[in-house]
Length: 191
Image 1 (spheres, rainbow, N blue to C red):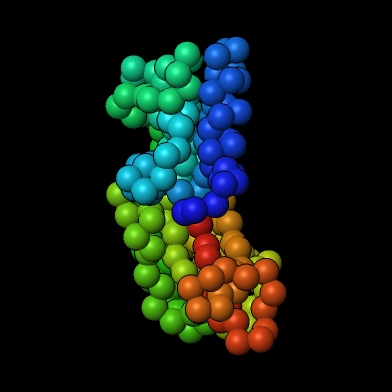
Image 2: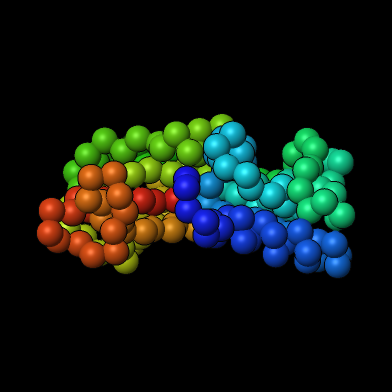
């Protein structure tokens, strides 16, 4: 806007341009997917990282040609680090996890129909869902899902991690405080 103060992003970019010129490596590590990151680029002037780790650690990309060390921005096409993805595929079956989540009556009784979030569509290394607030702690939610997955035949022998976060919203804004008209929901990622 009309402010004479630089935005935090402008300050970040300026500092990283200097650091890049000195050989430092910029890594973005986020729960968001590469697709989400690329969508942000159309709205914000975000530096291209040397390495992008996304999808809760299930995606790793470098860029070719790499971002310019002199200019500090500008990178080419995102190239998947195949060795990383191959290592994560061992002992994992997203279809089995999805079958266990949707096919376990105890989970449906507690949380209703559980649908995969769009953020994990197309990522065969994770299953994510948004659950309604049913008054259970994040530890209880994690235990519910771990128990269901361990007991379901489709997950026999699978290695997985259940990550749970509780979030409160006021309108479309995330807030740290609950109460006061805030709506609470629970996000779950199974990796």
